[in-house]
Image (cartoon, helix red, strand yellow):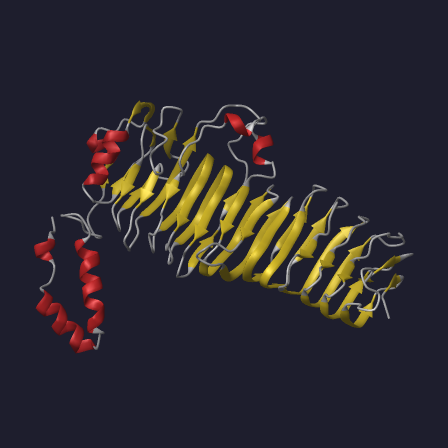
Length: 441
Protein backbone atom coordinates (compact mmCIF):
# COMPACT_ATOMS: atom_id res chain seq x y z
CA UNK A 1 0.00 0.00 0.00
CA UNK A 2 1.39 3.35 -1.01
CA UNK A 3 1.50 6.37 1.25
CA UNK A 4 2.59 9.96 1.23
CA UNK A 5 6.12 8.74 2.02
CA UNK A 6 6.13 6.79 -1.25
CA UNK A 7 5.92 10.02 -3.25
CA UNK A 8 9.20 11.23 -4.76
CA UNK A 9 10.99 13.80 -2.67
CA UNK A 10 10.37 17.46 -3.44
CA UNK A 11 14.07 17.84 -4.31
CA UNK A 12 14.01 14.99 -6.83
CA UNK A 13 10.82 16.31 -8.44
CA UNK A 14 12.28 19.81 -8.73
CA UNK A 15 15.44 18.43 -10.32
CA UNK A 16 13.42 16.39 -12.82
CA UNK A 17 11.25 19.38 -13.71
CA UNK A 18 14.27 21.60 -14.30
CA UNK A 19 15.75 18.95 -16.56
CA UNK A 20 12.71 18.98 -18.89
CA UNK A 21 11.84 22.66 -18.55
CA UNK A 22 8.57 22.41 -16.56
CA UNK A 23 7.37 25.70 -15.06
CA UNK A 24 8.30 25.65 -11.37
CA UNK A 25 5.21 27.73 -10.55
CA UNK A 26 3.08 24.65 -11.22
CA UNK A 27 4.75 22.53 -8.53
CA UNK A 28 2.75 23.73 -5.50
CA UNK A 29 -0.52 22.96 -7.29
CA UNK A 30 0.65 19.48 -8.26
CA UNK A 31 1.70 18.66 -4.71
CA UNK A 32 -1.46 20.14 -3.21
CA UNK A 33 -3.62 17.91 -5.40
CA UNK A 34 -1.68 14.76 -4.47
CA UNK A 35 -1.88 15.50 -0.75
CA UNK A 36 -5.63 16.08 -0.89
CA UNK A 37 -6.02 12.35 -1.45
CA UNK A 38 -6.59 10.15 1.58
CA UNK A 39 -3.77 8.08 3.02
CA UNK A 40 -3.23 4.97 0.96
CA UNK A 41 -4.89 6.38 -2.14
CA UNK A 42 -3.39 5.54 -5.51
CA UNK A 43 -4.76 5.87 -9.00
CA UNK A 44 -3.19 2.49 -9.85
CA UNK A 45 -4.38 0.27 -6.98
CA UNK A 46 -6.25 -2.94 -7.58
CA UNK A 47 -10.04 -3.00 -7.37
CA UNK A 48 -11.74 -4.07 -4.17
CA UNK A 49 -15.05 -5.93 -4.31
CA UNK A 50 -18.14 -4.53 -2.62
CA UNK A 51 -19.08 -8.10 -1.66
CA UNK A 52 -15.92 -8.38 0.44
CA UNK A 53 -17.31 -5.57 2.61
CA UNK A 54 -20.65 -7.26 3.20
CA UNK A 55 -22.74 -6.12 0.25
CA UNK A 56 -25.63 -8.47 -0.55
CA UNK A 57 -26.74 -7.12 -3.93
CA UNK A 58 -30.18 -8.69 -3.56
CA UNK A 59 -32.25 -5.52 -3.99
CA UNK A 60 -33.74 -5.92 -0.49
CA UNK A 61 -30.90 -5.60 2.03
CA UNK A 62 -29.47 -2.18 2.83
CA UNK A 63 -26.04 -2.13 1.17
CA UNK A 64 -25.23 1.47 2.08
CA UNK A 65 -22.69 0.70 4.82
CA UNK A 66 -20.93 -1.97 2.77
CA UNK A 67 -20.47 0.31 -0.23
CA UNK A 68 -19.37 3.21 1.94
CA UNK A 69 -16.78 1.04 3.66
CA UNK A 70 -15.46 -0.16 0.32
CA UNK A 71 -15.19 3.41 -0.96
CA UNK A 72 -13.52 4.52 2.29
CA UNK A 73 -10.45 2.49 1.32
CA UNK A 74 -9.94 5.02 -1.50
CA UNK A 75 -9.24 2.08 -3.80
CA UNK A 76 -11.27 1.58 -6.98
CA UNK A 77 -14.45 -0.34 -6.14
CA UNK A 78 -16.06 -3.09 -8.21
CA UNK A 79 -19.74 -3.73 -7.52
CA UNK A 80 -20.06 -6.88 -9.56
CA UNK A 81 -23.49 -8.08 -10.67
CA UNK A 82 -26.34 -7.34 -8.30
CA UNK A 83 -29.04 -4.92 -7.19
CA UNK A 84 -27.58 -2.74 -4.44
CA UNK A 85 -30.22 -0.95 -2.38
CA UNK A 86 -29.13 2.33 -0.76
CA UNK A 87 -30.74 4.38 1.98
CA UNK A 88 -28.24 7.25 1.76
CA UNK A 89 -25.66 8.61 -0.63
CA UNK A 90 -22.14 7.56 -1.59
CA UNK A 91 -19.07 9.77 -2.05
CA UNK A 92 -16.03 9.21 -4.25
CA UNK A 93 -12.54 10.43 -3.48
CA UNK A 94 -10.73 12.44 -6.17
CA UNK A 95 -9.60 10.03 -8.87
CA UNK A 96 -11.53 7.08 -7.41
CA UNK A 97 -13.41 4.64 -9.66
CA UNK A 98 -16.77 3.02 -8.96
CA UNK A 99 -17.71 0.41 -11.54
CA UNK A 100 -20.29 -2.28 -12.09
CA UNK A 101 -20.14 -5.34 -14.29
CA UNK A 102 -22.40 -3.63 -16.85
CA UNK A 103 -25.35 -1.27 -16.81
CA UNK A 104 -27.65 -4.26 -17.39
CA UNK A 105 -26.11 -6.33 -14.60
CA UNK A 106 -25.28 -3.87 -11.79
CA UNK A 107 -27.95 -1.60 -10.32
CA UNK A 108 -28.17 0.88 -7.47
CA UNK A 109 -31.72 0.92 -6.13
CA UNK A 110 -33.17 4.09 -4.59
CA UNK A 111 -36.60 3.92 -2.96
CA UNK A 112 -38.84 5.98 -0.65
CA UNK A 113 -36.65 5.49 2.47
CA UNK A 114 -33.60 7.09 0.84
CA UNK A 115 -32.20 10.09 2.75
CA UNK A 116 -33.41 13.01 0.66
CA UNK A 117 -31.04 15.42 2.42
CA UNK A 118 -28.07 13.63 0.82
CA UNK A 119 -26.33 15.74 -1.85
CA UNK A 120 -26.76 12.94 -4.40
CA UNK A 121 -26.94 9.19 -4.76
CA UNK A 122 -23.32 9.36 -5.95
CA UNK A 123 -21.32 12.47 -5.08
CA UNK A 124 -18.10 12.84 -7.08
CA UNK A 125 -15.90 15.19 -5.07
CA UNK A 126 -13.09 17.50 -6.16
CA UNK A 127 -10.43 18.62 -6.61
CA UNK A 128 -9.20 17.21 -9.88
CA UNK A 129 -8.86 14.64 -11.11
CA UNK A 130 -12.51 13.88 -10.53
CA UNK A 131 -13.64 10.34 -9.93
CA UNK A 132 -15.11 7.96 -12.46
CA UNK A 133 -18.40 6.04 -12.48
CA UNK A 134 -19.05 3.42 -15.14
CA UNK A 135 -21.05 0.35 -16.12
CA UNK A 136 -24.03 0.55 -13.77
CA UNK A 137 -27.64 1.70 -13.46
CA UNK A 138 -29.17 4.03 -10.88
CA UNK A 139 -32.89 3.32 -10.56
CA UNK A 140 -35.34 5.49 -8.60
CA UNK A 141 -38.73 4.30 -7.36
CA UNK A 142 -41.53 6.78 -8.13
CA UNK A 143 -45.32 6.57 -7.66
CA UNK A 144 -47.21 5.24 -10.66
CA UNK A 145 -49.13 8.47 -11.19
CA UNK A 146 -49.38 11.23 -13.75
CA UNK A 147 -49.15 14.28 -11.47
CA UNK A 148 -45.87 16.11 -10.89
CA UNK A 149 -46.88 16.98 -7.31
CA UNK A 150 -46.70 13.34 -6.20
CA UNK A 151 -43.14 12.69 -7.39
CA UNK A 152 -40.70 11.89 -4.58
CA UNK A 153 -38.13 14.72 -4.23
CA UNK A 154 -34.94 12.69 -4.52
CA UNK A 155 -31.53 14.39 -4.80
CA UNK A 156 -29.68 14.09 -8.13
CA UNK A 157 -28.49 10.68 -9.27
CA UNK A 158 -24.95 12.02 -9.70
CA UNK A 159 -23.46 15.26 -8.43
CA UNK A 160 -20.07 16.48 -9.62
CA UNK A 161 -20.07 20.11 -8.57
CA UNK A 162 -16.78 21.99 -8.99
CA UNK A 163 -15.11 18.69 -9.87
CA UNK A 164 -12.90 19.05 -12.94
CA UNK A 165 -12.11 16.08 -15.17
CA UNK A 166 -14.57 13.55 -13.82
CA UNK A 167 -15.67 10.72 -16.09
CA UNK A 168 -18.96 8.92 -16.65
CA UNK A 169 -19.36 6.06 -19.08
CA UNK A 170 -21.88 3.37 -19.94
CA UNK A 171 -24.43 4.44 -17.34
CA UNK A 172 -28.22 4.26 -17.09
CA UNK A 173 -30.27 6.51 -14.83
CA UNK A 174 -34.00 5.91 -14.71
CA UNK A 175 -36.86 7.91 -13.17
CA UNK A 176 -34.60 10.57 -11.63
CA UNK A 177 -35.73 14.06 -10.76
CA UNK A 178 -32.30 15.38 -11.82
CA UNK A 179 -29.85 13.04 -13.54
CA UNK A 180 -26.49 14.85 -13.42
CA UNK A 181 -25.75 18.09 -11.55
CA UNK A 182 -22.32 19.34 -12.61
CA UNK A 183 -22.58 23.02 -11.78
CA UNK A 184 -19.45 24.85 -10.72
CA UNK A 185 -16.15 24.48 -12.50
CA UNK A 186 -16.41 20.89 -13.69
CA UNK A 187 -14.57 21.59 -16.92
CA UNK A 188 -12.62 18.80 -18.54
CA UNK A 189 -15.42 16.32 -17.84
CA UNK A 190 -15.91 13.40 -20.22
CA UNK A 191 -19.37 11.84 -20.42
CA UNK A 192 -19.89 8.91 -22.78
CA UNK A 193 -22.86 6.59 -23.31
CA UNK A 194 -25.15 8.02 -20.64
CA UNK A 195 -28.81 6.99 -20.83
CA UNK A 196 -31.26 9.00 -18.72
CA UNK A 197 -34.97 9.24 -18.03
CA UNK A 198 -35.69 12.18 -15.73
CA UNK A 199 -38.70 14.24 -14.70
CA UNK A 200 -37.09 17.63 -14.00
CA UNK A 201 -33.74 17.79 -15.77
CA UNK A 202 -31.35 15.24 -17.24
CA UNK A 203 -28.10 17.27 -17.21
CA UNK A 204 -27.31 20.61 -15.54
CA UNK A 205 -24.14 22.57 -16.43
CA UNK A 206 -23.09 26.03 -15.24
CA UNK A 207 -19.59 27.29 -14.48
CA UNK A 208 -17.39 24.94 -16.53
CA UNK A 209 -14.16 26.74 -17.44
CA UNK A 210 -12.77 24.03 -19.69
CA UNK A 211 -14.05 21.71 -22.41
CA UNK A 212 -16.96 19.43 -21.56
CA UNK A 213 -17.32 16.47 -23.90
CA UNK A 214 -20.66 14.62 -24.00
CA UNK A 215 -21.16 11.81 -26.51
CA UNK A 216 -23.83 9.15 -26.99
CA UNK A 217 -26.20 10.83 -24.55
CA UNK A 218 -29.62 9.19 -24.77
CA UNK A 219 -32.44 11.06 -23.02
CA UNK A 220 -35.73 9.22 -23.40
CA UNK A 221 -38.60 7.90 -21.22
CA UNK A 222 -37.32 4.38 -20.53
CA UNK A 223 -38.51 2.74 -17.31
CA UNK A 224 -41.43 5.17 -17.11
CA UNK A 225 -45.01 3.92 -16.79
CA UNK A 226 -47.84 5.06 -19.01
CA UNK A 227 -49.17 7.28 -16.21
CA UNK A 228 -45.74 8.79 -15.48
CA UNK A 229 -45.30 9.60 -19.16
CA UNK A 230 -47.64 12.59 -18.72
CA UNK A 231 -45.06 14.13 -16.36
CA UNK A 232 -42.13 13.38 -18.63
CA UNK A 233 -43.96 14.93 -21.58
CA UNK A 234 -45.04 18.16 -19.90
CA UNK A 235 -43.55 21.57 -20.67
CA UNK A 236 -41.63 21.69 -17.35
CA UNK A 237 -39.23 18.82 -18.03
CA UNK A 238 -35.82 19.70 -19.49
CA UNK A 239 -33.17 17.62 -21.18
CA UNK A 240 -30.08 19.79 -20.72
CA UNK A 241 -29.88 23.17 -18.98
CA UNK A 242 -26.59 24.86 -19.80
CA UNK A 243 -25.25 28.27 -18.82
CA UNK A 244 -21.51 28.96 -18.51
CA UNK A 245 -19.60 26.27 -20.35
CA UNK A 246 -16.37 27.05 -22.15
CA UNK A 247 -16.15 24.78 -25.19
CA UNK A 248 -19.05 22.33 -25.03
CA UNK A 249 -18.97 19.31 -27.35
CA UNK A 250 -22.32 17.49 -27.54
CA UNK A 251 -22.29 14.78 -30.19
CA UNK A 252 -23.87 11.55 -31.47
CA UNK A 253 -26.84 11.82 -29.13
CA UNK A 254 -30.63 11.77 -29.05
CA UNK A 255 -33.06 13.73 -26.89
CA UNK A 256 -36.57 12.37 -27.29
CA UNK A 257 -39.96 13.86 -26.54
CA UNK A 258 -38.96 17.01 -24.66
CA UNK A 259 -40.24 20.45 -25.65
CA UNK A 260 -37.19 21.81 -23.82
CA UNK A 261 -34.63 19.34 -25.08
CA UNK A 262 -31.70 21.71 -24.49
CA UNK A 263 -31.85 25.18 -22.97
CA UNK A 264 -28.86 27.50 -23.26
CA UNK A 265 -29.07 30.61 -21.10
CA UNK A 266 -26.97 33.21 -19.32
CA UNK A 267 -26.38 32.88 -15.57
CA UNK A 268 -24.32 35.01 -13.19
CA UNK A 269 -21.33 32.93 -14.33
CA UNK A 270 -21.94 33.60 -18.03
CA UNK A 271 -23.15 31.60 -21.01
CA UNK A 272 -21.90 28.81 -23.25
CA UNK A 273 -19.98 28.41 -26.46
CA UNK A 274 -19.42 25.16 -28.27
CA UNK A 275 -20.51 22.67 -30.92
CA UNK A 276 -23.56 20.43 -31.20
CA UNK A 277 -23.07 17.75 -33.84
CA UNK A 278 -25.03 14.70 -35.00
CA UNK A 279 -27.71 15.13 -32.36
CA UNK A 280 -31.33 14.07 -32.94
CA UNK A 281 -33.84 16.44 -31.33
CA UNK A 282 -36.58 13.89 -31.74
CA UNK A 283 -40.37 14.30 -31.83
CA UNK A 284 -40.54 17.67 -30.02
CA UNK A 285 -37.48 19.51 -31.37
CA UNK A 286 -36.68 21.82 -28.49
CA UNK A 287 -33.29 23.53 -28.95
CA UNK A 288 -33.76 26.78 -26.98
CA UNK A 289 -30.84 29.22 -27.25
CA UNK A 290 -31.71 32.15 -25.02
CA UNK A 291 -28.04 33.15 -24.88
CA UNK A 292 -25.18 31.15 -26.39
CA UNK A 293 -22.62 31.01 -29.18
CA UNK A 294 -23.16 27.68 -30.89
CA UNK A 295 -22.32 25.72 -34.00
CA UNK A 296 -25.07 23.22 -34.81
CA UNK A 297 -23.77 20.74 -37.38
CA UNK A 298 -25.45 17.76 -39.01
CA UNK A 299 -28.36 17.55 -36.57
CA UNK A 300 -31.91 16.24 -36.97
CA UNK A 301 -34.96 18.13 -35.74
CA UNK A 302 -38.27 16.27 -35.90
CA UNK A 303 -41.70 17.39 -34.75
CA UNK A 304 -44.69 15.15 -34.18
CA UNK A 305 -46.64 17.54 -31.94
CA UNK A 306 -48.25 20.86 -32.97
CA UNK A 307 -46.99 22.81 -29.94
CA UNK A 308 -43.31 21.98 -30.42
CA UNK A 309 -40.57 24.08 -32.04
CA UNK A 310 -37.38 23.16 -33.79
CA UNK A 311 -35.30 26.01 -32.43
CA UNK A 312 -35.35 29.39 -30.71
CA UNK A 313 -32.32 31.66 -31.10
CA UNK A 314 -31.86 34.68 -28.83
CA UNK A 315 -28.77 36.62 -27.84
CA UNK A 316 -25.43 35.43 -29.12
CA UNK A 317 -24.64 33.67 -32.37
CA UNK A 318 -26.16 30.43 -33.66
CA UNK A 319 -24.73 28.88 -36.82
CA UNK A 320 -26.73 25.91 -38.17
CA UNK A 321 -25.10 23.89 -40.96
CA UNK A 322 -26.09 20.74 -42.82
CA UNK A 323 -29.09 19.88 -40.66
CA UNK A 324 -32.47 18.31 -41.44
CA UNK A 325 -35.82 19.63 -40.22
CA UNK A 326 -39.00 17.58 -40.34
CA UNK A 327 -42.60 18.14 -39.25
CA UNK A 328 -45.61 15.96 -39.85
CA UNK A 329 -48.08 18.34 -38.21
CA UNK A 330 -48.84 22.01 -38.81
CA UNK A 331 -47.23 23.96 -35.98
CA UNK A 332 -48.92 26.60 -33.86
CA UNK A 333 -45.80 28.81 -33.97
CA UNK A 334 -42.76 29.17 -36.26
CA UNK A 335 -40.43 26.18 -36.39
CA UNK A 336 -37.31 28.35 -36.09
CA UNK A 337 -37.52 31.83 -34.63
CA UNK A 338 -34.96 34.40 -33.66
CA UNK A 339 -36.10 35.98 -30.42
CA UNK A 340 -33.49 38.62 -29.66
CA UNK A 341 -30.77 40.83 -31.03
CA UNK A 342 -28.44 37.99 -31.95
CA UNK A 343 -27.07 36.56 -35.18
CA UNK A 344 -28.69 33.55 -36.85
CA UNK A 345 -27.06 31.71 -39.74
CA UNK A 346 -28.77 28.71 -41.36
CA UNK A 347 -27.10 27.09 -44.36
CA UNK A 348 -27.15 23.88 -46.40
CA UNK A 349 -30.25 22.59 -44.61
CA UNK A 350 -33.32 20.67 -45.77
CA UNK A 351 -36.86 21.27 -44.52
CA UNK A 352 -39.01 18.21 -45.18
CA UNK A 353 -42.51 19.23 -44.15
CA UNK A 354 -44.88 17.95 -46.84
CA UNK A 355 -48.31 19.59 -46.85
CA UNK A 356 -48.03 21.25 -43.43
CA UNK A 357 -48.73 24.99 -43.48
CA UNK A 358 -46.75 27.11 -41.01
CA UNK A 359 -43.90 29.61 -40.87
CA UNK A 360 -40.68 27.62 -41.02
CA UNK A 361 -38.28 30.48 -40.17
CA UNK A 362 -39.33 33.72 -38.45
CA UNK A 363 -36.77 36.52 -38.27
CA UNK A 364 -37.85 38.79 -35.45
CA UNK A 365 -37.01 42.50 -35.04
CA UNK A 366 -33.34 43.16 -34.34
CA UNK A 367 -32.08 39.89 -35.81
CA UNK A 368 -29.09 39.80 -38.14
CA UNK A 369 -29.34 36.71 -40.34
CA UNK A 370 -27.83 34.75 -43.20
CA UNK A 371 -29.95 32.08 -44.88
CA UNK A 372 -28.15 30.19 -47.64
CA UNK A 373 -28.64 27.00 -49.67
CA UNK A 374 -31.92 25.99 -48.06
CA UNK A 375 -34.22 23.39 -49.61
CA UNK A 376 -37.93 23.18 -48.77
CA UNK A 377 -39.55 19.86 -49.69
CA UNK A 378 -43.28 20.61 -49.83
CA UNK A 379 -46.30 18.79 -51.23
CA UNK A 380 -46.59 19.70 -54.89
CA UNK A 381 -49.64 21.46 -56.24
CA UNK A 382 -50.94 22.72 -52.89
CA UNK A 383 -51.63 26.36 -52.00
CA UNK A 384 -50.22 27.63 -48.70
CA UNK A 385 -51.50 30.48 -46.54
CA UNK A 386 -48.37 30.90 -44.42
CA UNK A 387 -44.99 31.99 -45.80
CA UNK A 388 -42.04 29.65 -45.41
CA UNK A 389 -39.83 32.54 -44.26
CA UNK A 390 -41.12 35.62 -42.42
CA UNK A 391 -38.79 38.62 -42.08
CA UNK A 392 -40.19 41.12 -39.64
CA UNK A 393 -39.47 44.81 -39.33
CA UNK A 394 -35.87 45.67 -38.35
CA UNK A 395 -34.61 42.20 -39.19
CA UNK A 396 -31.70 42.52 -41.60
CA UNK A 397 -29.61 40.11 -43.61
CA UNK A 398 -29.27 38.03 -46.73
CA UNK A 399 -31.10 35.09 -48.30
CA UNK A 400 -29.52 33.18 -51.16
CA UNK A 401 -29.86 29.85 -52.90
CA UNK A 402 -33.40 29.11 -51.75
CA UNK A 403 -35.04 26.11 -53.41
CA UNK A 404 -38.61 24.84 -52.96
CA UNK A 405 -40.72 22.23 -54.72
CA UNK A 406 -43.37 23.70 -57.01
CA UNK A 407 -46.71 24.82 -55.63
CA UNK A 408 -49.97 26.27 -56.91
CA UNK A 409 -49.64 29.27 -54.63
CA UNK A 410 -47.80 30.53 -51.58
CA UNK A 411 -45.17 32.93 -50.30
CA UNK A 412 -41.60 31.74 -50.04
CA UNK A 413 -40.60 34.93 -48.23
CA UNK A 414 -42.80 37.59 -46.67
CA UNK A 415 -41.51 40.96 -45.56
CA UNK A 416 -43.59 42.02 -42.59
CA UNK A 417 -43.28 45.77 -42.02
CA UNK A 418 -46.82 46.49 -40.90
CA UNK A 419 -45.67 48.46 -37.85
CA UNK A 420 -44.03 51.09 -40.04
CA UNK A 421 -44.39 50.91 -43.78
CA UNK A 422 -41.58 53.45 -44.22
CA UNK A 423 -39.07 51.24 -42.41
CA UNK A 424 -39.14 47.83 -44.08
CA UNK A 425 -36.56 45.21 -43.11
CA UNK A 426 -33.22 45.40 -44.88
CA UNK A 427 -33.32 42.06 -46.66
CA UNK A 428 -31.47 40.95 -49.79
CA UNK A 429 -32.80 37.94 -51.69
CA UNK A 430 -30.90 36.33 -54.57
CA UNK A 431 -30.79 32.98 -56.34
CA UNK A 432 -34.31 31.61 -55.78
CA UNK A 433 -35.61 28.49 -57.55
CA UNK A 434 -39.16 27.97 -56.31
CA UNK A 435 -41.86 27.60 -59.00
CA UNK A 436 -45.21 28.97 -57.87
CA UNK A 437 -43.84 30.65 -54.75
CA UNK A 438 -43.88 34.42 -54.40
CA UNK A 439 -40.95 36.47 -53.13
CA UNK A 440 -40.93 40.21 -52.40
CA UNK A 441 -39.27 42.58 -54.84
